Image (tube, rainbow, N blue to C red; front, side):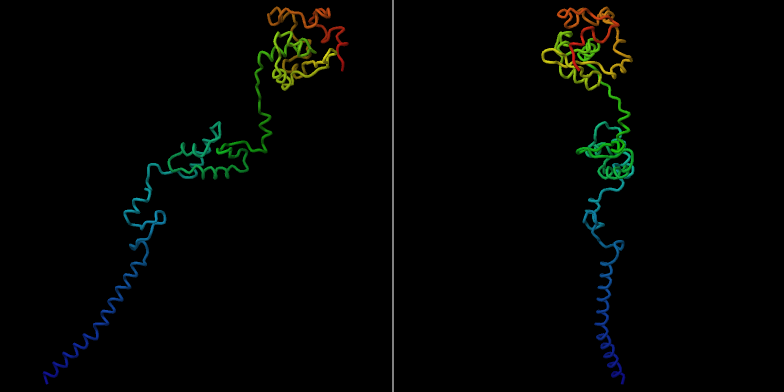
Length: 282
C-alpha cells in the first residue's frame, strides 16, 4: 500500500507539473510582450526615442545633441520687440533707405530684421509717419496725406551765380531791356539758363516787344523782386553814379545812347526816358 501511494503521488506531481508548465510559460511570454509594448508606446519621458521635430534625429542620442543649437548662447537674438526698436532707430537716423542686409549686418547675430520690419510697418499704419519700401530698401517717410504740412515748412535756398546777379542788375537799372542789350552791357553772351533761373524765381518777367527789326522781347523786374530787396519801386535802387563810384558798373554809356543821341537818365528819372515810349507797343 505504501508503494502504491508513493507511485500515485509521483504521477500526480508529474501530471500537475506537465499541465502547469505550458500555462506558466504562456503567461510569462505574454507578460514580457505586454511590458515591451508598454515600454515602446509609452511617453517620451519614459525613455522612448521619439524623433526631434527640429532636427529629425531621435531625441536622447548624441546626434540630436550635436545638431540642436545651444539655448544659452552668447549671440542669442534679442526679443522681437527689441529688434523692432533697433530697426526703428536705424531707419530714423539714416538719411538714405536701408536694405534688409544692411539691417542684418548692424543687428545682433540671429536677429530677423525682415520680420521686425513687417511688424514695425504694421505698427506705423495710420500714424503721421510710415515705414515704406523704396526699391529694395526701407525708409521712414511722412504719410502722403500730410505732405501739405511739410510744403509750408520747406525753405529753398538758391544761390545766384555771378552771371545771374549781373543780368538781374542790368534789367533792374535798364528796364525794359532786351537780351542783346544785356549782352552788350556785360560784354559776354547771356545763357538761356541764367534768364530761365530769374524767370523761375519770378524776379523778372517779359515786357513789351520793342519796335525794332526782329521785334525782340524785353525784360523787366517784378513786384517779387522789389519785395525781396525791400524796395517800393525801381526808383529806390542806388543811383548809377553811386554804383560807378563804388566800382560796381563800367563807365560805358547805356546801349543805343550814342546812336539815338540820348543822354544818361538822372538817378530820380522815370523808368522810361522821354521819347522812348514810341519805341514800344503794348
